[in-house]
Image (cartoon, rainbow, N blue to C red; front, side, top):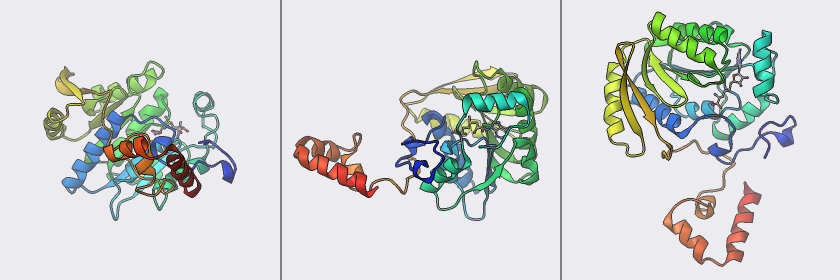
Amino acid sequence: MSQLGETAEELPRPERFADVAGWFSPVDQLLFDWFLRRQDEREQRGDLLELGAYLGRSAIFMGGYLREGERFTVCDLWDSPAVDDPNSAELSFSYPTLTRRAFEANYLSFHDELPLMVQGPTSVITSHVGPCSCRFVHVDASHLYEHVTGDIASTREVLLTDGVVAFDDFRSEHCPGVAAAVWGAVAMDGLRPIVITGSKLYATWGDPDRARQELLRWLKTRKDLWHAVDQVAGAPLIRIKGKDVESPTPPVSRHGAPRGHDSFLSSRGSAARRLARDFLPPVLVRALRSSRRRTS
Ligand SMILES: C[S@@+](CC[C@H](N)C(=O)[O-])C[C@H]1O[C@@H](n2cnc3c(N)ncnc32)[C@H](O)[C@@H]1O
């Protein structure tokens, strides 16, 4: 199945969240889930924003936490030209066949309505998202220093005081500009890190202490996550690693097989499924699988 097609026939039709192309590791899915559920439990209201949506992997996940009366905005260039040459080179190298329609097809496979889609450079985002309106922002657009510093300034403007921001690729060798911009904001702009994973740094411009303490309590209950606390720039910073992490339940695709059918015969899962695979005649297993493919 192509994720990047141009014609209707080639548009993606993901059957499972795992079919959506993108970069969003299980450990970060767990942390998004932890922060967004915590906001829900604390009845913290506010909008969601993603800068850099690509084909929708992280957006689809975030969309599952949107509540009545809240707005989810995603901003991406998709198939529009970039505003400068370095950004243009970054796009043609990393996302050569990305299209807005592919994002829409993916997103609508999991949710009934699209988020507000701002197709353009992230520098325009504050014209679409109001000041102090967001409880959670995911920054994952250009990885060039000049763009990321702009995204940080916009995020600071739109984020509520107790809101949380997640920065992607804050330490990767291929994008030193993100590291420079994010740690620059920590040193100079009052950004306060809470936790880091291998790919993302989670921070706030509010008070990080309570979230850190609650996160540490939760981490003690997770045998699948390694963690440690370092002192960085005079404050504790939680570090998390987890290779064989159990992801939170992913959003469900409308193209997936009906319950009790796909789930019954998929390759991973319950003892009942394994028993069925082992003891049903192969011809029956194959027939059920192919009828599942025809109906999905
Ligand atoms: C790493 S991908 C996003 C991945 C996505 N969040 C996920 O987890 O699957 C980065 C995205 O940023 C977009 N992008 C790059 N520069 C941009 C800019 N200046 N303004 C808006 N979007 C940009 C690219 O088109 C690409 O879709």
